Every structure is written in structure tokens, then in C-alpha cells.
Image (cartoon, rainbow, N blue to C red):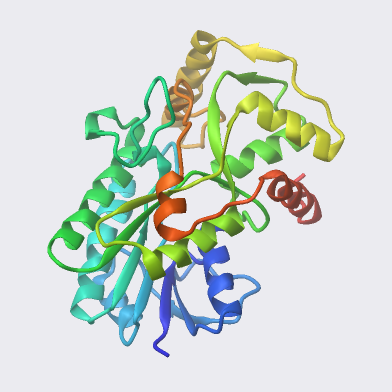
Length: 324
């Protein structure tokens, strides 16, 4: 069996995809930056970077399948050009190397942020969306990277695109912005909340969706990997039940949240320190990211379960690993 390359195996979704592949008997190779390491998994490591074409050529050599999950996932960066370099040009570099190496198929991990949202019903893959609708450098860079993936698929290279929503669960090392909701709640650092909403999914189901996309997905098609549409208040209520904590009582009006984001980001731009409330995150919160995974269920056989178990694993893992 040819090796399977996973980029992003040091991160949340990538780690779970790599683990699932290993449990199913795949030989897994991970592209890892020199400053990072893959924890708790026994796999082959190739040192490299998405911006280093030579390292990508070495990483894809002999591989039959590639999961491109790595991304610069930040809602604030002092130099936004870094996000475009890794997410857009890095994706182009990897797909070029994979095509030249004769890789059989690539699964590219985009984001639900690239999905068009309707006012009267959940968003889906067929809702038209434009770059101008993307909020912030992260979403814009991922949208452009997704267009690169579609471009390669249109030219005949088999690239399938998945759009995960907000995964929850264990081994969220950084943590991601979604995991940070759990950490902040457990720390008591979330005394109030904004009126927003997310589609939440168990990260193990997200990983399963990646493997299903590799097996059954159509090149050039996008598949939303999500589960439950929940308001932030509903997420906090579930966390309260699981952790035996309290639900924050106060809802922050959007203008006040915007002012806090503006001040926090302005200070970050001056100091270089990550803002507590990135303005892009506040802007994103104005729209409830409620979507449907019907296409993935219909075409891939994607069958996500309830997210309460994932929330419980997240709470237990963050507590056990010193995050709170």
C-alpha cells in the first residue's frame, strides 16, 4: 500500500485524521514544520513547510493519497500576508507537487467559512458566495485556496474539497478558536456571550468525513462536514451541564462587542500581542453559521452523531492536560 500523506497532523483535525488512518492499517506520512512535532502517533515524519516546494516534493514522493489539512488558522495576524503565503500559495505548491508526483487523489480541507449563508434556511454548498463576502484575512485566504483546489480539479487532477464546521473533542492542542470557547468557559473567562451561532460537529466524525471524501467524493465537489446548528448560548448551556458549571447570564450587544474588538485589535497591532477579542472574530459573530450537511450524508454516507460526547471529551481533555 502506498503511503498516505497528511499535512496538519500536528493540529486538531489533522491529528484525528492521521490516527483514524493508522487504525485502519494505512502507512501514514506527516509533513511537519521543523519547529513542530506530532504527538502520540507512530508515523513517518517529513520535515518541511508549505512554502518550501522542495520539501513538498519529498513529502509526496510515492504517496497515493494526500490529505491537505494544514492551514494558518488565525483570526488576527500582525502581517496578514503570512496567511495568504501559507494558505493560498502553500496549497498551490502542494497540489503542484502532488500532481507531478502522480498522486491518485487529494482531499483538501477548506472551511465552513467559505460556504454561503442564507437568511431563511441553513447554508449549503450550492449557495453562491464571493470573495467580497469573506470577513478577514483568514476567510479570504481560505476562499482563495479553495478556488485553487477547484482550479486543479477542473484541469483533471482529482481534488475533493471538504468544509468542516466547528469541530469539538479531545487533542485540540493549540487550541482552535472553537476549543478556546470551551477553555474560556471552564476558566470562568466568559461571563457574557454574544448572540451568534455555530454548526458544531464531533472531530472524530469530521475525520471520518475526510476518509469518506477520499473514498466516495467527486473531484471538484465541496462537502460540508457538520452536525448540529447551535447558538453560542446553547453551547454554553451544554457545557454547563457537562462540567456542572453555570451558564453566563448576560448577552453582549453587538455594538459593544464591536467596540471591544476594535480596541483589542488596535492594541494588538501596536504591541504585536494577540488580541483577546479579534475584530474579525466579532464581525464573523454577526452571522450565525448555520449550515446543512445533507449533501455529505447523501453522497458520502456521512453520518455524524450528537455532539454532547465530543463536548464531554473536550472538557475532560482540557482539564487533564492543564489548559484549565
